[in-house]
Image (cartoon, rainbow, N blue to C red; front, side, top):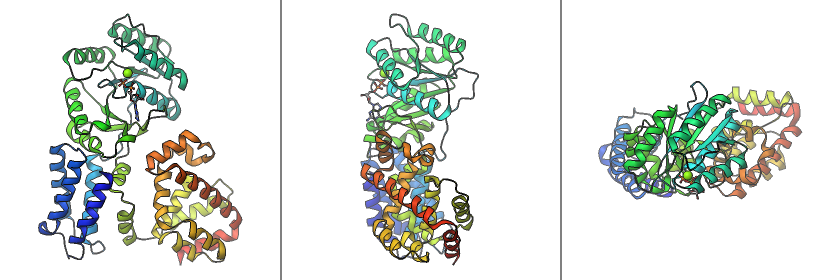
Length: 444
Ligand code: GDP
Ligand code: MG
């Protein structure tokens, strides 16, 4: 769908560009394209309907903005509604509970609960510095318990030695006691799943829920199941007090149907997405980034930004200050610069303004065209903060994850890492005098 929606929009936007103003009449075709693209992406029908209605209202109700064409105004409305439908703000994990904070994972068999339990443990350990206890109560498939144990060893997180001969409720109670005793911050409960929603499973998971009183109850769901994901989520939501959703296998989901349906149908935010079989920290779900990816807004959004082009001198000064003071130039700064460059008409625009860059300017211009600027930004956005500050840690699996997150090939990540290295060197070379010149050029 990602490709589809963008293509369809670009094709039909011609109908409204050049028109003075958005009217019901001139956006009819474009709205129909949006609807078709969403249906093809396996977005649930009620969501498709309400989504297109909201886009229409938003587009029609947009205040007259002289700097935007009706086509741009429409795209802006689609983008804004995508973000809203995906949950609006980023929804952070809640651990505000006297330790141990219990997190319960529920979902169908094969959804990715055990994998996500390990990935979540790694997220909590690495990103939040928490002491985590993993607990499996999947007594139906002893292999599932072993699976969790193996993953726990792999990531260096403790795993409660569940005995599959005991009842799930008893295991959970004993594990919770242990977690209290040994001062674990978080206990993650990996529950059993069935192939379809059934009463026995629901009752078991409900009992586990009331026994352990989780602060977070995550419905774990396979993104590849499209609108079924939202329907299963709804069934679970009616039985359990869900607090959020983990959308797994998003790496294989080119359609985005599940992502778009889940929040609206369940009312629960997607808090994390799983991007692969390898155990890496779960990724917090960013509605705005996914929305941009769905629309492949690179081109379209930059059109809008062009119009609001304006140089943020504060930002430029900050970077200049940083380099002058000898502090490390990181991908955080690099990203800020990309934003700046975009505002100033792209890399070529910026380099043209830099005095004395001569050949270097042309060399870089060849390598960095303005479209790749947008890819670069996507790649940097897919990095963790740690990776942005210490890019030297970006090796094989991190590269893969970043490439997936940004929707680019691994070699593009490699290219960017090299370009970053080059920029760093260039920054050093320009030294004190150069920076002042650069700031001056930006002003003019
Ligand atoms: P459970 O039955 O819900 O515990 O599911 P598992 O965690 O055992 O996962 C089922 C299968 O899906 C395994 O082969 C996992 O490797 C795979 N899997 C889980 N999460 C992801 C993901 O985010 N991406 C991909 N590609 N595979 C995943
Ligand atoms: Mg499992």
